[in-house]
Length: 213
Ligand SMILES: [Zn+2]
Ligand SMILES: [Zn+2]
Image 1 (cartoon, rainbow, N blue to C red):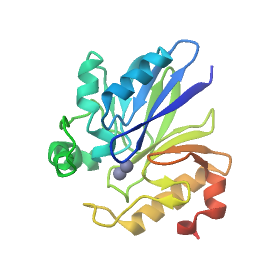
Image 2 (image 1 turned 90 degrees about the horizontal axis):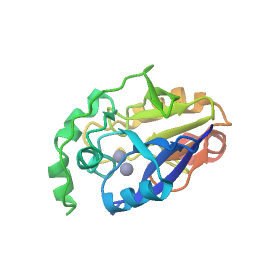
Image 3 (image 1 turned 30 degrees about the horizontal axis):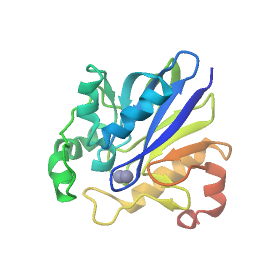
Image 4 (image 1 turned 45 degrees about the vertical axis):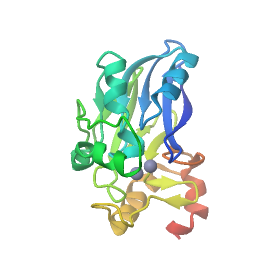
């Protein structure tokens, strides 16, 4: 069965926490539970899904600050990703959250760090890992070739790219390199869910994204 996806916007940053699941088995994963766990749990209940694991695209507070608590609430399911280079962000989540007045954030250590070429499974479906540094040094994209869709976090947006100003260890040139060499290389037919805002396709961004001209 093809996977389904649903977006639950969370935190004051309206981050796209994403549920992905197999409609036949109802097994699935929660991607980037940044906070507002009540909303995420309501989404899980509405789908009726059994959460196998939590995936993180990167270590920023709006993506990862609810991960440790959700892991505990769901009985200790594994957290996979991001890349080890974002460890410094995951370690300092309580401080980062406090600076935005967000409560309840916990530092989190994933059960598995991911790197370029690794594979993650969700409900038996395979996702290839692309390490896409730039917005953060440890950002990863999850790529499902069978359905031509990817989850890219804050690397690439519809009409935009990830911020690099004022963020620790961010690098604009490296971000552009990650997008050009890895995401655009997926091909125009690929659809993607990003960390904020509407979904898009690689072809749409290649043709119209002003940051990639
Ligand atoms: Zn971010
Ligand atoms: Zn974000």
